[in-house]
Image 1: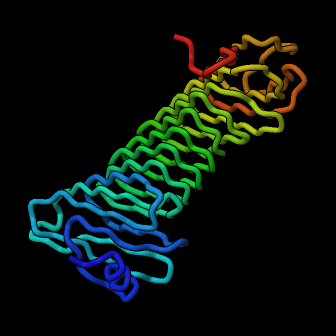
Image 2: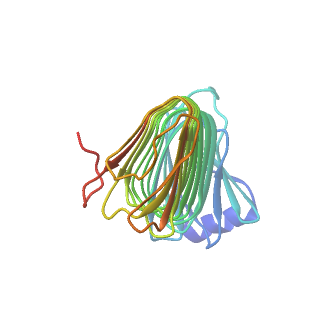
Length: 291
């Protein structure tokens, strides 16, 4: 069996085959790249400068590893059934960046401080405890994220986007899927859906910038804690309801309704074509929605 040092020398030398459960030496600044994977990938982290990869397969397949600059490219050795789905478990250094893609790919990524990019055509994506920049796109699959700290750019087609207990800057977009944001303390949010409903529960921070946009979906905002914000609401054929006092001469379809709650401080823009807009008072603690 190769020592860790020997494995590291092979990795830096170029490409090689390794068994289905392997440990690789990596160095600060490396980025793991996995392209065109078919199946399920589960990623955890640890405080070692090593990458562990394990594949669960009935075939005697191993990994092919190549280095190109700072990119460590990991692929499966070709087998008798190249289109079969596989299960892959990865443990990465917490600092490591990750780039993962596949046509039929389900992924769960936890505990990384590095940047994460995940793209697929079909399959659900789950993220938790990420501190770097996250970019994820699923054409036909849901995206669920919890405890994001850095930034997140999330895109789906027909499925849901759910984000909870996060402070990250959020840039979210869905065609027909609903969006649910709970327990959020972000300084900037942009959430857009063509026909899906948008639900937000969280704090509006001093100087924060928040935009919620939908063509045909409902938009519900539940403000947690002290409320100080300036709002602009536009709806062409929907209704507007507010549990906060709003001084206005009346809500008119197709016209911006501008008002200030408290002393201002945050900026909130809400636009919908036909869905109702609801502005609600939330609890002072955990940010969960009532009922």
